[in-house]
Length: 120
Image (cartoon, rainbow, N blue to C red; front, side, top):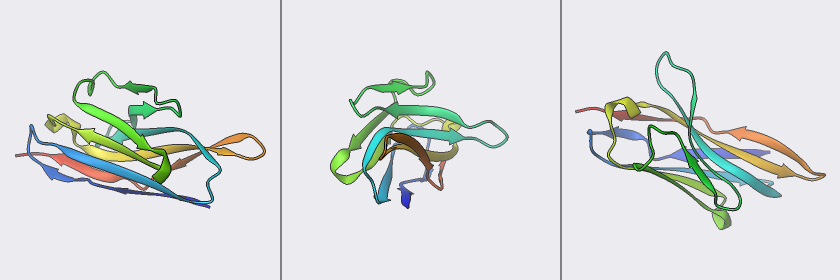
């Protein structure tokens, strides 16, 4: 059983910064990609950023240049550094980890979500 624990959400003023963390724990053979999604009220969940096991990254156009995704493989943790936050970044942020299982297969695991509110 693998669990994801997210932290770092909260209330921040426009222009401010937050850093989200998502740590995977349990029986982990390997991790493929790690990603952050978000879901604003009455909107569909959308991909924010993804990082592969070769450290390739991809970002939603709306966050390029402001958000940075990174990972610490020794800690099975993915981070999302969010700078220059805007009110439209307000959402519940979810991390998703794609686990590598033996024999080879892939399994997606989601975190519980952490609320980010950008407001003055």
